[in-house]
Length: 165
Length: 165
Image 1 (cartoon, rainbow over the protein chains, first blue to last red):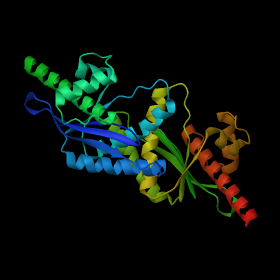
Image 2 (image 1 turned 30 degrees about the horizontal axis):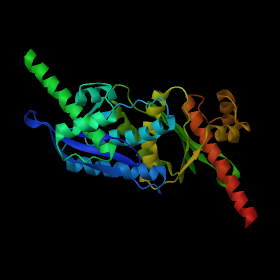
Image 3 (image 1 turned 30 degrees about the vertical axis):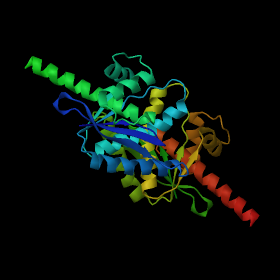
Image 4 (image 1 turned 120 degrees about the vertical axis):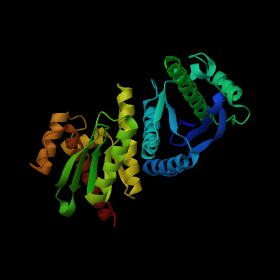
């Protein structure tokens, strides 16, 4: 089972995607949020504590996140990266491997096209995982998408390994 | 006593700058390093553990770091930000306040000029803190500089408060 994460300081989306038996199922999803009135170090600590709690309860055996690509807003990129560092560290603290996928890989896995827009991704996530997917915020949809991407990629890896055996 | 930090994933410089009695003294300095053969999440975890150990031993009552400004290399900015998030979180975990200064504020505090170059900053750090400052790596000099900046700023704040009392 994979825990897909969409990192952010104010809001981190998460989705637990099970791929057992070749069928993808959403086992849980939600958001980690940190209060805006706290200072940045305290918000990062709150995120760290929530992430450790989630990883402890979720029963995932791998964590999946998008590789970040920012071209325009560097200060947003830095704020998201600080939160992302906290999440990667929390995964390592629990001994869980982290799989990273580019935004293009995620879109392709979910929609078949690496240039799909946010709406197409959201519609396909709903189709693949069923009505249980919350329609907002985007961050949860994005966490589902990276979870789906990981399950597809690991399914392909298994099939490839089997065909070579 | 302030712990100045210059964050990085491979190498984080640190410097413990004491300002008691109006005289700045370097009480210790060094680097936290993480091995390049590990994956990024494991390196962030190693940095987190070393930072917690350092904060436990150092006896600082405040942590000082530079605000990051990157214009060119966004992927470097993101890697440094992930490490910076780990350090801010470690400070919050120990209940220590974090003071942030812009690169211009640090240069001005150390050299008198906000546009000083790296060499001028290094020379002034040596003059202010004495021969104990290691001349390399730069990261330790930069950690000293932000520590000096914090001591100057808090000295000014105290003087201002006293003049108003």
